[in-house]
Length: 176
Length: 178
Image 1 (cartoon, helix red, strand yellow):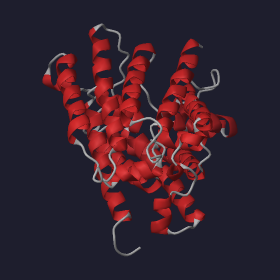
Image 2 (spheres, each protein chain N blue to C red):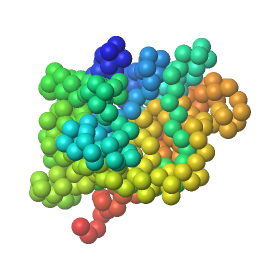
Image 3 (cartoon, chains in turn purple, orange):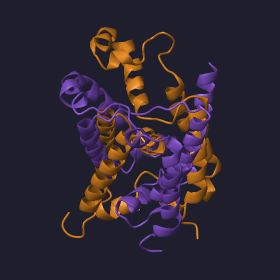
Image 4 (tube, each protein chain N blue to C red):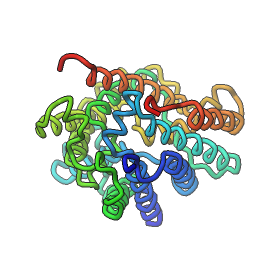
């Protein structure tokens, strides 16, 4: 029960941040994808920069409840390509279409309903895809720290610094 | 100038990174796309229980022990509530360009037809979740949470997704033709 309440509160904060940061804005999303307005990619890279450091600092104390996704290469690449196409066409991702819907945007609601159908269609074809795509070239739940055989924090610090540096000092909007 | 989001990308990004850290400490990292399957599964368990049980994928989710929902689903419900309340409170401050269901960019390229925009949004949503389930996550779970955990899978997802989305967006908004 506590976990459910924590989930709800974290979700509230997540939704609020996405709305306030303009992540549910078609203009901002397409601006990033057209490489004209870097707001959204800078928001994401900052979040990842801070998140990497946060997660691996927790990990040092054995306090991180990690959830590493398995690297089944073909499924991730094909799925990512389909996802990217849908992202550009709708202008939302699964999280921001929820926030857009909460704002009363009908196009966001259309994306949300489409997404429910997309998930259902996937469940129909899953048995066929499972062995063909999901089980082949599966390297399991690996991180780059595993690949390099080092403690995650030694990779997290330089990665995080490089990401934040790029975001704050290198990336520029085309019209800036 | 009221054209920029209510909070800057710096503030939003840092807040999101801290929220991800908090979530990872308390329960587990952020994720959204799985919950679309959970919702489908809960509904299917209600309207077509035999089908839901027989389907290898749906049978894994939304099992009617309680409501069939957990932390992740409550998180998504929270997004709807938190986003909605914030949107109401800050309606005045939201840039005009970001209000409404017909983005002006879309309108000037593809015309004023609402049917066209909503159909595209529906199709986009369908592709989003099909792709996300195939890849194992979306922007929040794979890109933000996954890359923050330095997961190999999530770097592959992030690069592929951005690469393809940029190509498709550039194609949609190319200068000539329709």
